[in-house]
Image 1 (cartoon, rainbow, N blue to C red):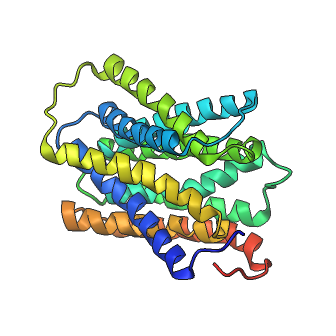
Image 2 (cartoon, rainbow, N blue to C red; image 1 turned 180 degrees about the vertical axis):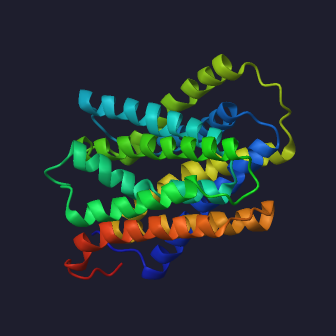
Length: 306
């Protein structure tokens, strides 16, 4: 019998998931502040996560049958979402603070809307509200691009925002394709395969583009990478897929509002990152755009328990 977990447990796990994704931006910054280069930082994080997923996979030994289409999805997921997207994210954070990076990344749900309308127009048509919401969100991104606040140099800030924005779309693309073609694909198989592809690929990229590491693996860097790999990559994805079984997609999308708030608060407390009024207005516009695109498809649905 399929029983629903206690409501309080689902709320608790949702809150933990938000904290993990929100805090990942701060720990990314810690690794970079300790002297790690961006691709090596991403490679170590994903290698740790790959080992965790492999261990869980060997313990659970799920029964599965992969089709050729599924193999392509796993490769695509690993190369784009788990490898390239993290390279762009770490590279962007090498230029800007964790709070600002998380605000730019909050455009992710709107990137999903844009790509979905192109790749699966029949099931995800581009409605007037989606267009309006996306344009409002884009206005927020433009405002952040042209803001003058923050401590970063102008060129560095623009480069950082641009790299994070690339990461957003590189992340969104496999999400849409897996939604379209991967309904039968086991999440554990997807993540284990994806991380096992991403980890060696990132290590190879790091050796080619950044060479042998010349930085010192300090205690703070090692602990931060362990936190990122075990908790923010492995555990966070486990929780995300578990919650999707019991919580509506709309309510899971609320994390897009909460994650940047966590990241901004932690950036202020631990890195003394100060954002300008333009940054907060830009974040408000992005959140408004997300709300507009999501509200139409959910207000008419029958209320759910969670």
